[in-house]
Image (cartoon, rainbow, N blue to C red):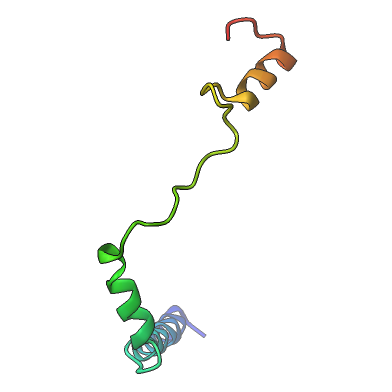
Length: 76
């Protein structure tokens, strides 16, 4: 097999893959999922925000201060 044959086979595989992804994306089974995703920017933000539990209530990152202490860094 020469490089032209290998190149042709790879091109054919990529074309089939592209057509498969296009058919999958535009199938009627995917429409409800895409409609829901399209409306996400318009949804209400009534959910509670995700709080980072790695920081203490006073705003100091407890992981950072622990790691600095364990390494002997006194410049915290």
